[in-house]
Image 1: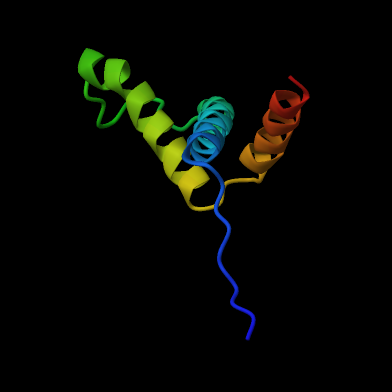
Image 2: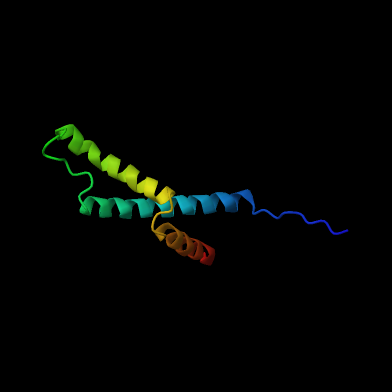
Length: 92
């Protein structure tokens, strides 16, 4: 009888791939955050504005909303970036 054993990548390769994916997701989140800012998300409303504090921390909110979008699937940019980074890493 033939037994099949699972083959796993060495831990170092798996960790490098996780680091590449994390970097790709951060880049996608930064891109989405800029797009959200351009769309007016995070702008202080005049009626219920929270003053200087709201202005200072609104960028954090936009960045977290962008990262949540990426974690939910995003726009596919992180996958493309990951593949490009992995291909470049494999060349070296």
